[in-house]
Length: 55
Image (cartoon, rainbow, N blue to C red; front, side, top):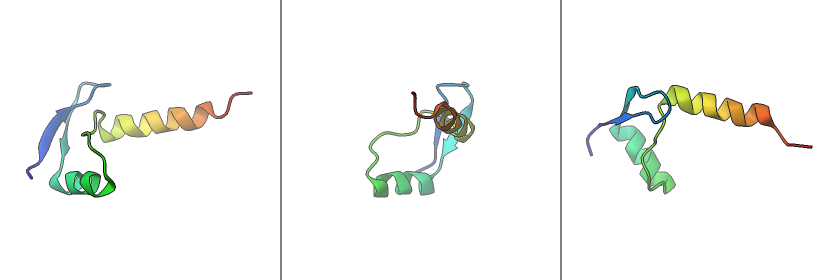
């Protein structure tokens, strides 16, 4: 496996999906490559946490 350069679907910036990350994804059973850069993934997680349960 070689490092992959991927374009983030949210911000459009390129980021590297390293060999180590690819091995981790494969080990966890993930079949798709990430579509967001690490920064946008963090933002997305925070948005989900902040929205919380609806009442």
